[in-house]
Amino acid sequence: MDISRAEQRILHILAQGGRIDVEKDERGRIVELSCITRDGWQFPGLDLAMFRKVKRKHAIASEKGGPYRITRRGLQLVRSQLDNR
Image (tube, rainbow, N blue to C red):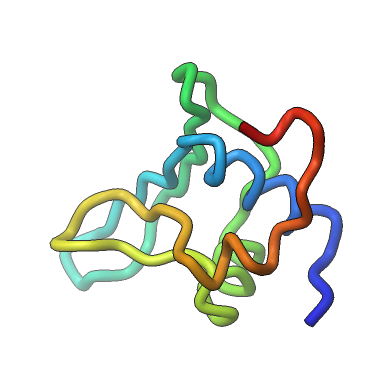
């Protein structure tokens, strides 16, 4: 299954140790998303539509209410690059 270039960028950040922090309102709806790199920088290329596409492909998951991280399926989808550690 091919994934878009924007999805590749998000998955590469997560594969290198990044995370996606989600803030929800009292109804449980997502209010704010932030993609944090392993160095602590915020990546601006993540929006709600992109988050839902990547989550629908089971490339990311959250455990016990924590931040979203890449799954084994996500690692299979991401293409290897030289800077991917």
